[in-house]
Image (cartoon, rainbow, N blue to C red):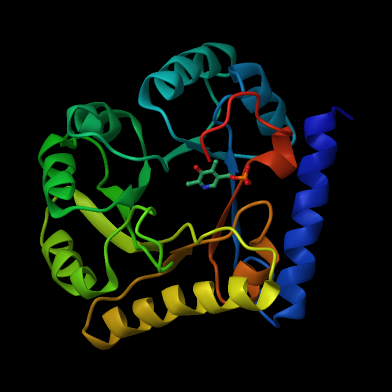
Length: 235
Ligand SMILES: *Cc1c(COP(=O)(O)O)cnc(C)c1O
């Protein structure tokens, strides 16, 4: 087995164990393989090992990779998720080439994505990124802004609001990991109480996916544990 296939298997086992420990349904958590800084060959290797959803942070890097992957495996059904910071001038390419966006943190960005989503494609699946750590440095909507933006997004044709995403401040203290993920889950419950139904909690990465799954994650975004340490690193 290739190293990527082996690590993928290990991550799947780790997810299954966390799901079972939490008493959740076996298929409750989807694995998003975060392939930023890894090339198309790595994506194809993971795909051959059964992985079909990939997360990317940089638009141009992702588009280049998609082209190579499509040429090598034209029949592959791969879902591409955009998870990085969104600049206004990149929304069109995101709307045209991705299936999901996890990192919508402004109404203006949502509106552009909605307007630019091609009519022949299904609605773009959207998660709103929320700042659940107290630090100012983290991007994302403030919890106080969330309801208004969610209501606006629900009304936009071309988008389908799926849920919330967060990147909590890194901590090795497991209770703090749980507390942050619990906050995101509670915010989703508050939206639901306001009539905005969401089915997605995108939370948990290589270092904290176990806590995220215990707190209700439905998508974990995992890079390092599958592909290895990134050479250049931004996060
Ligand atoms: C890079 C990245 C990940 C993956 O992080 P790992 O620690 O490598 O698993 C997940 N989510 C986002 C938003 C990222 O940018």
